[in-house]
Length: 165
Image (cartoon, rainbow, N blue to C red):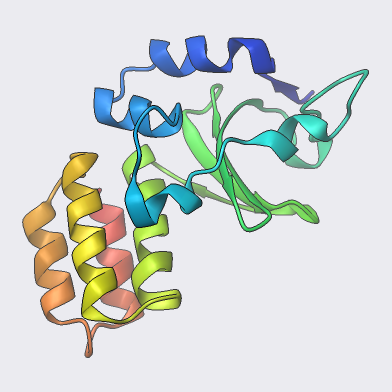
């Protein structure tokens, strides 16, 4: 059975996690994040599924207890409190979900999006490094090295860095 953290308990549940305070503030939208604000929208759509009887009902995701973290571009990121894995999925196809091992891997996915997929200029790289420092992403030096090799950077290199988080 799929369960979700009720919307009125989301903030409290996020605060109870043992994540860095910078990550908690990011998820609660208590700080302006400049260029990265658009990537971490509050998960409004998450709770509209199943409304009004069972808000946040995503049976396609199987037996999980979901805490929605953010959404961007019709994709939802949530923590499965039963497995402690992060899942992300497109709203129109939730059964085709992917999972990550840590919040830092999920945050790095947004950095990938900002730089390799949507960006590509020095401006986006500098914004990504500044953002990574603000949320205290581990291994900033490794991220800087990755960006130093931006042009010749392969998917294998990016995946390797993400898995190190």
